[in-house]
Amino acid sequence: MRRDRPGTKQDGETGQYTFYFQITNAGGRKGCSVRVQAASHQDATYLFRENWPKLELMARAALTQVSDGEEVSLMLP
View 1: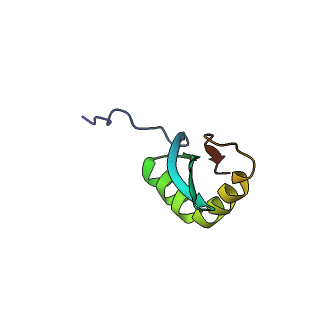
View 2: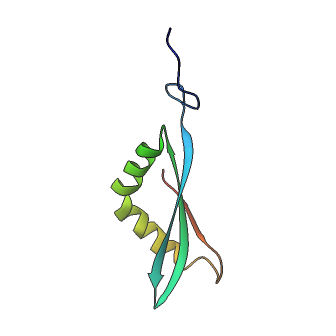
């Protein structure tokens, strides 16, 4: 008899994962988060790392649009 592991996603179903990081700008640090849609945490981590150069550029561009104390929030397309 076959038993499925609990909590696994069905084929084609994705979850949303959030990664947090800090970026420096003009001597200060700013908190950032990015949401990634992926089938597993491992896939989300892979996408985050593969797209890091693009994410860093997006975060730096968004720094000019957020006020002090506000977090930069991004979503990986």
